[in-house]
Amino acid sequence: MVEGIEEVIVSLYAKGMSVSDIEEQFKHVYKFEVSTATTSRITSRVAEDIVAWQNRPWSPFT
Image (cartoon, helix red, strand yellow):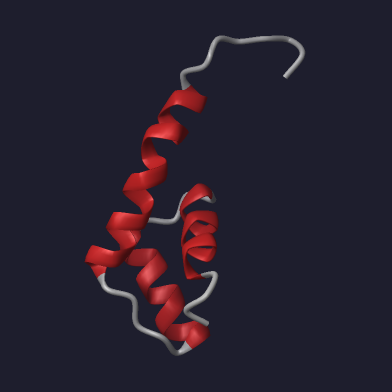
């Protein structure tokens, strides 16, 4: 389970889940606890990319 945890966290975060929502999801679905620090560390790595994507110039071809 530990292998691939980052991908799951990033996927849930990209779908709009908060850090606390992600932690609860892991507790209930995977019976696995992920700390707030770990979740925040992982989501902060992609946060800049998400903001850049949201602020990209509009193009009718994307």
